[in-house]
Image (cartoon, rainbow, N blue to C red):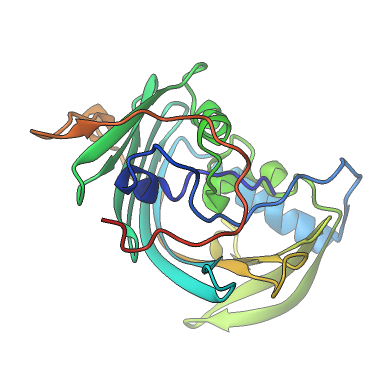
Length: 268
């Protein structure tokens, strides 16, 4: 799984984008290895990849991130994220959370991130003009994390397995009356992944937990998915951005790889 980094842009905007990167749990990718994935787990991921390769879809996710504060104690930051995908080159994500509201929109050429609380925005020109190129550009420029990005890849099952060495089915569980496979994967040097996929032809994600077991206290990232919709037809205007009156444009700077640190929750 690629640990992409674009999720705390609202906090960056709130801080004026002039300082370092806020807290983000990250890990260097492991050296390539031939994964040992049980057939049942591989088949479920393949079905998921085929479903999420759709040209257009939307979904919602409730996420919980763990940060460490200045005293080394864990804090949990909650978000509600709504995503719209129009492949290959348009993307919209709106996030409401403990650290504010963020709108992230990509029109195929330029990505914009906007913080309504502070009426600040930034833009990134994306060479290549695709959603995949957007994720890679955001990683290189910002160094903040977006663990859901694998599900937006052109081949989601392959992206999810990047760096993974083993994978297996733990059990079949029932969530809200429907059956799901509980899958477990290991990604050296210290990441474990749990994924719950629906037991049907779509194999849709319902839950995901990423645990950074090599970090003190083994912090994690949790996502619960809902409202998958493959019958959306978003107009082009949904992926455009016009700065509101008085909005301040701020510059983005390349940053060093993120390390666990204090969050910027409540930044003014």
